[in-house]
Length: 225
Length: 250
Ligand code: HEM
Ligand code: FES
Image 1 (tube, protein in one colour):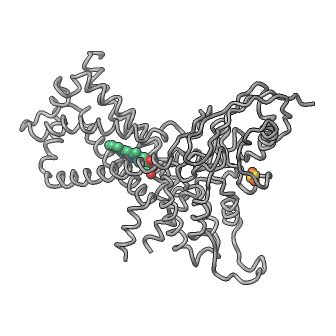
Image 2 (cartoon, rainbow over the protein chains, first blue to last red):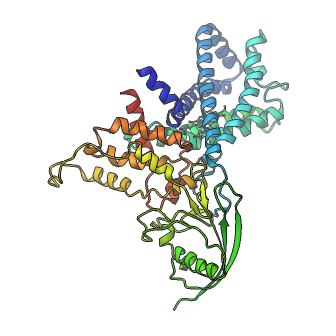
């Protein structure tokens, strides 16, 4: 019975959108933890290398988290793209005359675009940092992060990170508070509180990641201090 | 002492649902600024008929902003540029002499064009038929104070019930989502005791019908709320989602 109901749920637009919202919010929590880890890099190579190395000790846990993250992101992308395609078909012919006022924010109208950029970023990020951290067999993580081949010693990589973090901010500027509404708690006290807290996720978290790329890739790389 | 307006009207002309449509220009001179937008179309149609041409098909009924028939986009916005106003209540003094005004039908796959500006909105009727009513016997009119309802709840229910089902939300939405309409219809019952007995089935059926009709999903962009002539709030969409989740889990 419940299984049947869940099947109805997951094939409905509201159900799919709730999956997009839940997975999006869960990913936001992961980013918070990820950023807390990354900030250690400001305290120097030794601390950073030590931190990443100690993560090795809880490898099974990390692997489990990775599998969950893949599922979360997979659910997010699959459902958001399915919905976007359905809604594109629902429009048919678009409005032919241009409106001279924007009735909806730019960030809300560009979720598919910003999401796609994030996907490209994630592909690059995982195939460089994540992959090399796993396979290099060395523990000089700080060196890898700042390396010229794929780290912030490479201005192209730095630029990609800087742009991607602005895009992430954009995605979450609309996404975070939208998810609160999607989950049906938009009108509650909790929902209003979470909407207030959304600035942490759309501004502070992306700005935190941005600062690291900026510090190592621009300030230190070009010897500005 | 108002000055007459000279305007150019660009109107979408389309013979039938499967024919190709396009804009046709009509220049109109000496337009009385106190006319409503529909009266402007009346004047134009009289001229077209006199000239032996095909008049512009558009839907209208009450002409006082309560029936939701006058579905059309004016300069790209549902019901035109004035907030909380239907096309029939939109007066020409909101426009300037020399303006070019574009008029087109609602844009959504689920609202196929019948002819020119008139679209088939029966998808909305089918959504209502699927559960947008109360069929429990509520007896003859009870004493007004017999069922106490707090003011705030009553106001929210009334505000949701103000939806006239015109379809502006669907046309304004980049996803052609019917969420604002369906959620208003669900909210108006879910807030009141009379709506409770059939709540679960109502939500499940109406959402299923909405999806079946091919409307898109809600991205919470807010374009619907901004152009709704009855100021239906997007809070209703959050309410609908909550009620839907409750119905699925119960
Ligand atoms: C990696 C590629 C990604 C893609 C392709 C993507 C795509 C999308 C799309 C298309 C939407 C809009 C759904 C709609 O139309 O309402 C969306 C919503 C959202 N995304 Fe993403 N996204 C991605 C990554 C992320 C990441 C990394 C996060 C969080 C850190 C995130 C958080 C959210 C949230 C919170 C929403 C709002 C859900 C709602 O409105 O209810 N997304 N995503
Ligand atoms: S004609 Fe009835 S609302 Fe405009």
